[in-house]
Length: 238
Image (cartoon, rainbow, N blue to C red; front, top):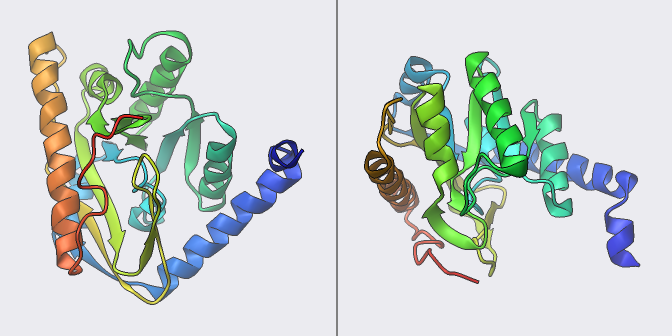
């Protein structure tokens, strides 16, 4: 009964609005620094790019987005993700629904539609945010984001937003949610580029490069606030 109520439109709307309101409060009360200090020079130089995130570290991505940045993000279709989707819209971020980093061919079924929509968004000049790892397999980059980079010709930039005061959840994705009145880091990693003619072996090299880059970025960002990356153990299969 409670599960059915939680899936109703009014409840999801209230939860989405509540999450967006909380994130606005968190943004106002957290002292953020940038890594690198000229981060937005790199952002502007690479637009539109694919913003790569780890599952569980994605809640605070809106803090990286300025009013001048046009951004959309890929969010899955399950009920919990609907809350995230509604919050993103309240924060001025576009939403695409689907899954793009699965274990199989991302061009099949719903993945094909999501891939087309992300390609269209990049062609229109929008930054596209994608959780790079495979659901239920923490911190292992899936093939979808690499295929997206190959077909679009746009670079992938690892992204991280971390805070010193936070709740670290005991979930498969090592999710973290910031708490007010702490310090934070907004970080951008080195670009990963995939040539249109990239072979399967070259795509695998790009996949591993992105995976290593995301891990290094989170390790560095957390170190800057005197903390350890709560998801560093990664790769836990459930």
